[in-house]
Image (cartoon, rainbow, N blue to C red; front, side, top):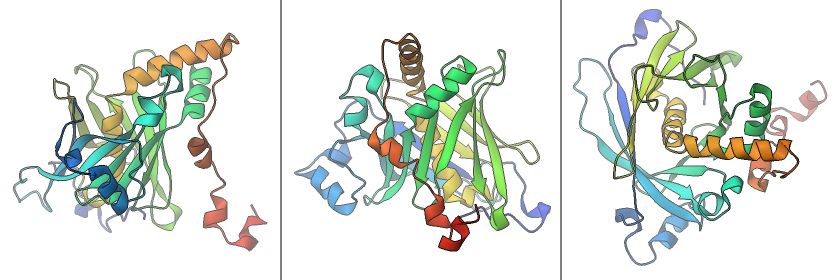
Length: 288
């Protein structure tokens, strides 16, 4: 799947909110999706992506409109979020690896976000500060999307970057940057072409775990599920990024001082497999 761009510039006017996603994280494990006899087994029977260590950690709500003339409807529940406990809650702090997955109301897999430990250590080594990196996989695309935190200078806010493929081998690039004047947990999404703000991410922390709301203001991107899933996954990561940075910072210094050697989970290594075997023909592999 690639982003289909409008034929005329007039077809694409960034302005009002066209689509909203709410990622509402729970504070406990007692909620509707897990209540009932053998509910976990039922979810696993619907999707192999619902692993045995899955903990339902939140719900997804959504509202959308097709034009600015329509009224944006109220949010409705469209799915839920799981956390892989064996990789986060049931290991030592320095061995933690954040993996979360999104599912539809019916239990169908939507997207996964996986923290990339080796990339984080490499980026942190180059920049001399802890930086977060993760990949996003979605059901709409066969491609893996990398989302990386970059250092832009001492006075800049947090900055992340990713790109999406477009038609005819083109691509679109986006920067997710922390909003100035906020508490540090709100972000805006900037599209390189035109330097336009195409989305906002608002964070609300509280007793119930926190809500992270994605507001998409570009009518084309509001219809692109690949783009939407990336921002949904990013919004969930906001709640964990402080713990991730602390973990990277501590592990990085221990490794530098020869006191610890980090390792990659085999599932992380599998994401580094040669993609050309999947996307190129056999005769083309001889030319690259």
